Image 1: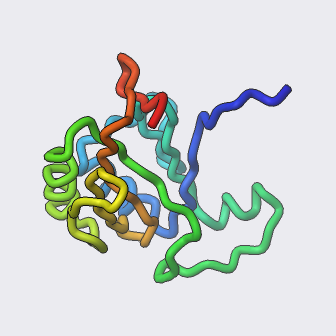
Image 2: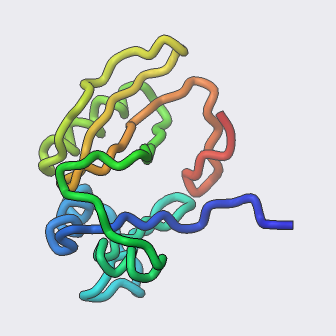
Length: 143
């Protein structure tokens, strides 16, 4: 049986120092395994890694075809515990230089949500879901 989990998400970085600086400006802490060649940030459950995109493509054995202006076909999410945290999180992301794509608003499904892109157009959602359950580390275990 394959373990049912996601342990690490890696974003291919066009400009690793710039992207690393953005996540650092959000107050995110790196692990001790980070180096000049890649960054790994601690989160509540899944580690977020930044790795040069050309090296990531080479490691996967695929041809590199993206540009920094292209939105990736994946959305990462920061789920928060209260609706007010959606607004305060987006405020901090704006101050850090994130591009706000959708301002915080009440969602049709009963929550509150907003979207932003980091400096390399990786798409993120910030969401509050009234039925979400978090563990003691802050990892979402149900919604």
